[in-house]
Image (cartoon, rainbow, N blue to C red; front, top):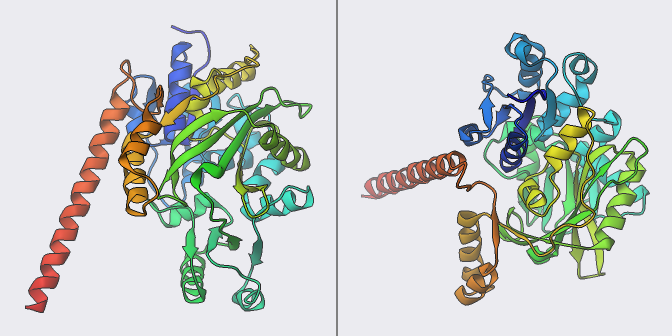
Length: 404
């Protein structure tokens, strides 16, 4: 048995699984709170059951500070989601008396969770952003009416609040005109969400790029890593289905201006999009935690889970100065959907798609020595797809019966 303390991962999907596998190789016992159910099928992670409610922040905090985790006192706690980050930030003093936590500038982390504050800090720091508008009341919609450009993103200030209110949906609404804007604004605000409006920069998905680092107590970046997206599903607005590592110092420089302006410590990630209209990188969002692309970062040679864990317990290790460039992360079933959508639009043919896949691939879920998560996820998605298809057929049958 390992003499190292256990670890608890708060939320997450592919990132939580990647963390568990990395720490499992160290002999560390890993537990998950609020992680995707199929992650619990990994031999490297044990689920801690928490009641499913509309207030996961309160539930997760109560679990960490209650009797359910008495046996895990001294464990390292890591955030794999925005909810996890909020729990660690808002309950830091209480949690620090019970668990081992990473360094953090709490105010900075909470600022980066707020999409409006993130854009405001970026603007003040000279980091380009899409055009955005603060919307506090319905009258602000009318006040900005002539300045708005479509399509627009109606974006909640706090993504995890949106996901609690609208589970299973994307993190925002895209609108193409005033009527859709009013409808989306009404729907989100009726759910109690604060929102902002953001210009949707319409560029190919491979214009999306990211930078990752870890900022120590003196705000020094301990490593540099960049990647870009190849495809998303749905194209132009969905989640990345195909990623590739690269090295882009321009992305690093833009991200570091933002990180230093806000004063982040610990893990930091910023995503940008290249706007061909003026050639500039423009900020999309910032994350101060492990992200969904963690399996790619780890496969490229930068094991962030191991690095952060050992640093927290006082056994720091240095990350390599170099990582594998050109390494790819593929979500196969999602990328098939992305290809089909692009083919329908005349943007990508079968030969081009297959040629793009003719490389060594990294997979977020599939592992020969840990098959449970991939199998469980596939079964879960197949079941959902089947239920959706049955529902569609039944609705069509009822419509046809009614018309007759």
